[in-house]
Image 1 (spheres, rainbow, N blue to C red):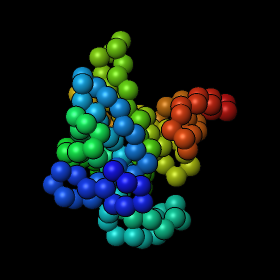
Image 2: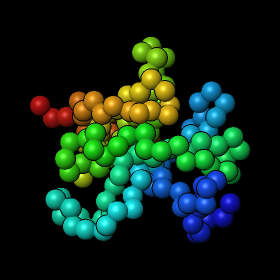
Image 3: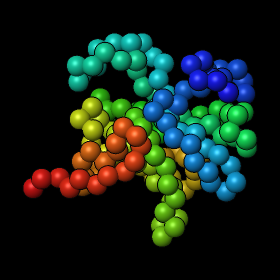
Length: 147
């Protein structure tokens, strides 16, 4: 693996996991990230960016060879105009669900999705009662909304 070059999955396609995270569930590594690749255009928020198809995931046993698993959260499952960037997936032992936190809008609101499996599909639940939850370094910080 080398920085500064395009990484490809086991089928030879460019890896689409922008702003992603790598984690391990049940002895397998999962790489979640935003799947971009559509036409670059001016979005409703005023930003020029490529279309987002949602959150894709890849799996690996060695952190080098990554198999594309598909979209685990489709952009069409979210409210119109929102993107799902910087996804973070954790397992909630209490609910036995996989929980995906993400920046779900251009004003950095945190979105929440859940699934029964790490592969998904994840169902978009909505926004949490906190703002600015995901920092650029990927750490989670809870900032209560002003009332």
